[in-house]
Length: 317
Image 1 (cartoon, rainbow, N blue to C red):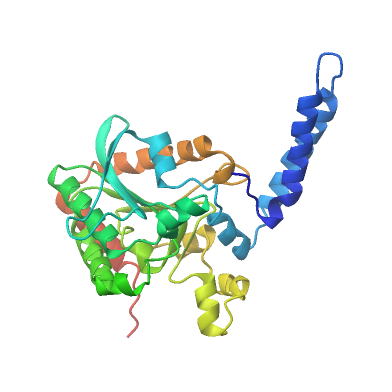
Image 2 (spheres, one colour):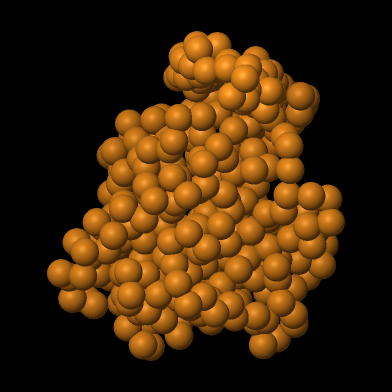
């Protein structure tokens, strides 16, 4: 699906010209010199645009409709994918996909938020906002993974848990709190990747891990910029100002030194511009951290996760 952000428009227009020239170029009419000139110009423009994005632009990039979602990472990184459905209580939740697969030939569990690209899919996936049954499904898969000693990979990409009345009636807050407690106590390696938008408790419910990684153009915050602006200034249109105040980008959070463990680079132009290349960068990082965690015993894995959470709190007397 063709989609681009406002700041991408000059680059898109230049790439369209390039595609036209490539289509017109033949043995009789050679545009190779002009094509090479425009390719260099496009490369320079791409670097200029994506190296100078502000926090609000990075938030928009993290929400890009063509950005790779959980199932895209499953396609490019994992094999033998088998999806699990339902929470054995109410229904299935398409906003949170869970299942089992193989990573580098070894069995594992995969859990992640799933957004949609067209209107029909967005509605079906509830815009990546899980209901309590989604979190209960995730918990069921986590417990099965622990029973069989399988590492768990989670991918975070949600504006937050669904705030509907039905979700609250079915125990949304309780489901999130239980997931947080259970994830903290797991005795298998848990590696979290904030792949797009990490919003509030809806993200945190599947983001308690031994390693928390964050993609270069992802964002992670306690509230969306629009929600923050609506509370502070009674004006949801001031999302740009709120984004600057929240300091929600990967480089901001890396400076804290205790929330994430590594920033995963993305292809120039963003992960949405090249899914296979972005997935390969994620794969390399996941493999490195999994190898490190394999050296720890089950009790050490749980203790390491506990100490990681404790390190996020500073108490002043």
